[in-house]
Image 1 (cartoon, rainbow, N blue to C red):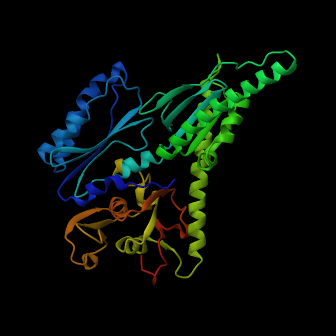
Image 2: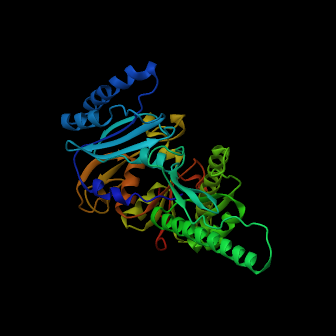
Image 3: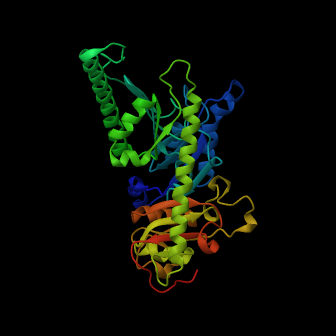
Length: 395
């Protein structure tokens, strides 16, 4: 799914030297405790050898000490500048990239983006006629890990069981019971709606009692209902297997991600067939679009973004050419050569993926990572645009 990293834009506006680190953060097993203890000092030494300031290396060393009490696997993403830790993200679940230590003229958010693209928020609900357990979490984190939160909503329990009987009194009793069910379902639906509006989850998975589940679904807002899917799981019932809900959520998230990416690629293919359409293809055209704040969604293929922990090279480095770009202190933010700087100060050079990502953040564009060769024409970069393109720009 396309992501926005606008909250980091202030980081990209500052000059100076930046330290970016992705590392394991758990204490691990008994056999690995010693390695975890010496890891921070090794990272400090790597940063110093790469030209980091002493105060920056020390800030990172302090930040990446092993996290006790947090279940493995867990990683930490840290950015330091001017002796302060500016970003400190704990990322539970399997680490997407290799460990990464970098000193450069800009912070490199690519490892964070690569992990976050597999870290979609979701809401899982198990409902019965008395209330619900509602979990807000992120994939691939397990329930109960990271910033996962679960709340239990207990509704009215009076008159919840229909009993055999007859006459007018039975009708009143059943009516009262159904009203209680509806009221409880309404409260659960309202909480789901609140979470959808506040957290923007990719999926709302609803399991539990069939009748209660249907009542909740019927009372959701349109926005929540568009994200909702039913799951044959009832974790509020004794002996129920929570793995059923976990597996269902993983499947639903994979479907959402695949559908979102397919729609994006289809849109790019459609625009590629138009003369001067609303898409740019190839690094040169994408840079030109970013320089004009024209890009709405930046699309980077794995050719440019493959695991930065391996030095920004793919599994077979000879299969791609890694290029650096100029990063600028002001608009147009990125340039292939100094003639495009338009008077802006040149801060230095950065790998293409990091430079393009920075320009996207500073121009409020979303970012999508796709597999190699997925972009039409097998371009390494593309962009959906806010307005139509001008003449083609050479790659």
